[in-house]
Length: 531
Image (cartoon, rainbow, N blue to C red; front, side, top):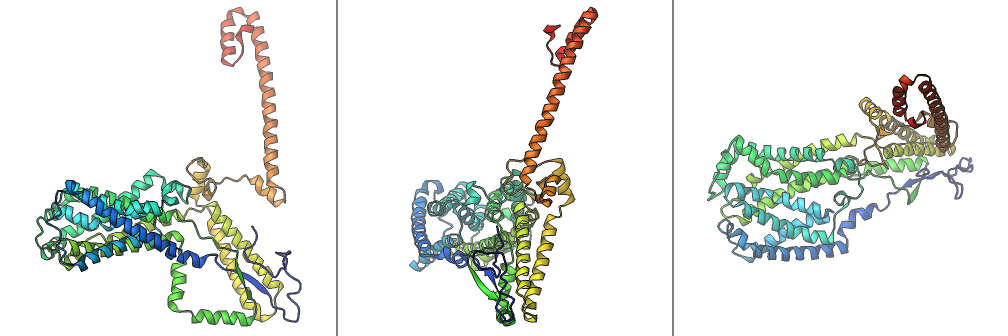
């Protein structure tokens, strides 16, 4: 793959600087600067007309399915929720709840979630309301499970039709597939996420939340769950394990499976290396708004995995906060708005989601510290690209006016070399592990293995330095192995013949030792019948 920006080369002579660029007439030298392909399309694809029409069908089918499922749930719930439900006196209240239901579906749909993401998202968003009904309103667990199941299914089934599972959940090849499929890692992240939720809720139970519940929840039948002590911590942890697994799947799996950004090449514009153009570029940078500059440096500077994790964590925290407020204050009798807000802040969001996101970011940083072969390959391409641009700038040097552009390219080369050096300096622990245990795990992605698992013979380096084809090494290695096998085969046949001859002579000369001779011949793979 060649350099990713053109030089002053003419068509058909790509890579060779034009000799006309440096004439005294001040011919302008140009360098092609890549423009990301489809940058605008990626931002607006989720809001296309087709996507909006699909969402309208999804919302309508979800509402119809929810109505049908809850109508069939009467034998299961047995009216358990009737005395806790708030009476809706006007159509305005009904329309508000329906509109909020549509918003619940719109957030995961236009955020690009697949069906499994939507399942986890809807379940986590409704978790605080179901937890309140289960622990403090004495609603039967079967009723809570039935209501939660119908709510999730009414959202997930339409999602699975209009937007099936993505690569992260369908089992197709993805980034970090070995880590995502590792059972120990899954168990660790699930338990850690559950502990985050459990700890914040338990701390609220033993401090301020009981008083808050008594003050702002009129007619609350029971608050013994808030005074259960350490025993309540264990039961709370076990009940929140599905939430921990859902947080792991929604936040960690999708973010960890995001491929690294690749610099695109196809469409380019030309930027002239003259002093006037450099000054115009500096003026445009100074005129750029502070918010746009912060967005480019702070947000776009992050990796795709970090951006996905942060955006999903914020969406989950804000939607959980808003949904809990709407569900508690709008559907449960006797709950004041302050009470709904206080219950939500008691541990579910944003504190629980925020600390869960920090935990997963830490795990993601540990994962991202493993350099793969493709990362080093991209680093080498960047170095070659910088050398090529410096060659073009030096060949077309027009005087002091192009000095700024040349200095910028030299700085870029220095950064690329430093990055390559950091990525290729192996951790001693990784080097020892690679020397003791080769990369034989079939779960690891063989097309992009970790750098520390690659064991390159030193002879290959010598072949490349001598401008020889590395494939010759493979052919010569096979020939050497064949020659060695032939030598070993000849020696084995010679020693076998000598053994048989010696055994016959010993058996005839010393008949009393014939049994021992036969035993030795059989033990060494010979034919004792010839004796």
